[in-house]
Amino acid sequence: MTSLVLVERRDGVQWITINRAERRNAINEEVIRLLGEGIDAAVADRACRAIVLTGAGDKAFCAGGDLQKNADGNPFGVDYSRPQHYMVELFKRIQDCTLPIVARVNGHALAGGFGLLCACDMAVAADDIRIGAPESRIGMTPMTILPHMLRVIPARRLQEICITGEQFTAQEALDWGIVNYVVPRAQLDEKLDWLLARVTSASPTAVRLGKQTFNAIRDLSLRDALEYSQAMFAAMASTADAQEGRASFVDKRAPHYTGR
Image (tube, rainbow, N blue to C red; front, side):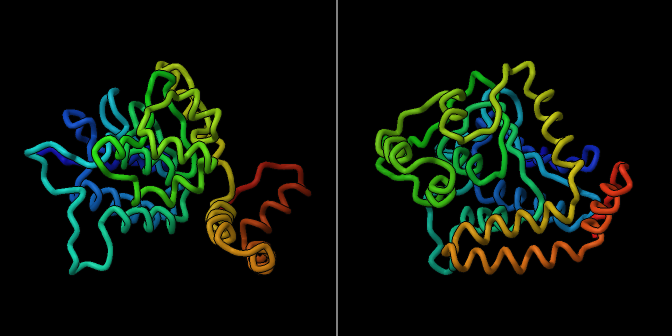
C-alpha cells in the first residue's frame, strides 16, 4: 500500500510530501497524523536542519480537506470526546517545531492547504499556482486556519479572501507577503535549494532559539516581549554555537557549528 505521506532525508533536510496526487493532495485524519510524525522525527534528530513540506505531482500543493463522497474521514466532523480537532493538533505541532519549515508550493493551495502554507515559516511558489480559502462557497468559513492566516496576511485583505472565497495568483501572494519567492515552475527546485542552502548554513542553535523567541514574543505585549527577548538573548549567548560564531569572526574563518 502506497504511503499517504512520503518522508525522505536529503542532505540534512527532511522532505515531507503529501502523496495523494490523484486527490489533489487533499488531507484527512491519517494524512495529518503522518505529517505530524514526520515533523516530530525531524525535530528529534539533531542532524536535521530544516523541513520541506510539499505535495506530490504538479497540480496541487494541497487542496484542503478531502470532500469526496468516498473520502476516508470527514474534515468537518467533530469528535466531542477529543479536546481538539486533529487539524488543530497539527498546527500546534508546527507552531512548536524548532526547525524552519519551508513550503514548496508546487501547485494550488486551497482551504486547509492554504492554512498549511501560512503555518510554514517560509514559502517558495511556482508562478502558475492559485491560492484561496473557498469555504464561504460551501457555507463555511476558514475557522481552523484563521489563526495562522491572521499572522501572515493584512487584515483587510484577509477579510476579502475569507468573505468572497475568491482565489488569487502567486504574484499577488508575493505582493501580500504570503510567500517569500515566486519563480517559473521550471526554476522552483533551484530556488528552493538556494534558500535551503542559506537556511542550513546558519547556526542550528541560533535557528532553534530564534524561532522559539519569534513565535513567543509575537503573542506578548511590547513590555513582556522585551523582557522575554532579553532572557533568551542571554541564553543564546552562552551556547557553544554562539561562542564558535564569535571566535570564527575574530579569526576570520568559516564557523563550524555543532548545534550545541
